[in-house]
Length: 209
View 1 (cartoon, rainbow, N blue to C red):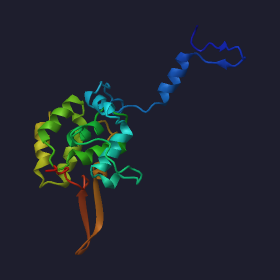
View 2: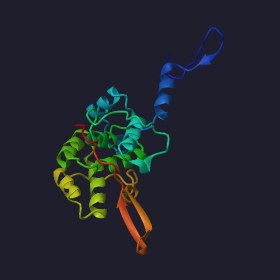
View 3: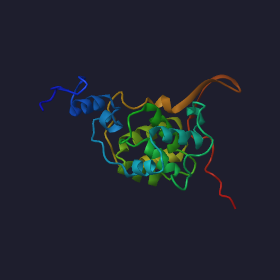
View 4: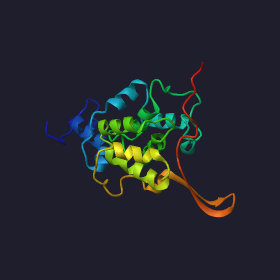
């Protein structure tokens, strides 16, 4: 049947063919980060692993809040962890949120940026996963912001040194570096600008003896 042609059901109701419905559905779908950056969306083994654990895009954000990113909480997250660190490490959670295969959402990127510098994360492992997830451009963007706001923190330099070179991201797609920090105009000594990198407020789970 030619595209756009209608057929009549027994009850007389006209419907469009399935191909057109799929086209309209696809047009309404949220694009991936890769699509927004102008690159090809890949099949992510890391996101596949997350799905096997029952973690979709929203669940990954919830897990980041449960791991200590409480500044991104909406107050409705369950207390019971959706996955343990043995099932999905902090490095994996960060890179899943920063994977270019994930649907585009600046909130997810900010959650991933916070998890990127969680206590105990290995910069070399993160760099390796950034290559696998085709997220080098994004991770470099976050790491450069981290080095700017935390120049004394060696983590950011180690991460940048471990990452391969990459072009600048497409303008207007990624969150501005100021979206990764909290700023206040007051200190204990009085008025004054204080900038704090947003990261998990809790350390890695302690092992039970």
